[in-house]
Length: 165
Image (tube, rainbow, N blue to C red; front, side, top):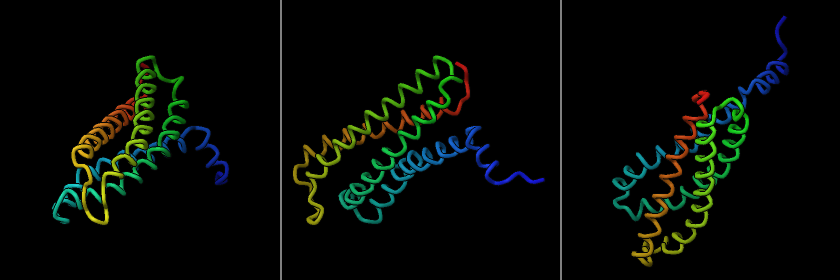
């Protein structure tokens, strides 16, 4: 006799399949999206649009979405971490906690930095209002986002490694 769909689904919830899938899909969307955008789309956009400023005005909008996705991804990553915590050893627990805290702290920083950088852009006029200040804040934003991405990659490694270390 076939297993009813309800029983099959509830079994997948109980055994962690649904949580692992949601974790994986969320991380793929957030960190994968960041990787693809920063590694390919920005460079293609600069070439097609004819400059950094034009592409930057698109990136200004895209980073709002990346920040929102990050704010959604972090609680899902915390849920996964809490669920696997007891099956991990002290080294893995350290890295899971440290990387999640780093990602969360940087996310707060990115939410705070974004409007500061935005105020230095005149999008309709396609101009930077204070180049030196913009450059400093933009570099900080890029460095912070890259550190967050790196912490995310390390976090995923320890979450998926299944090690008792």
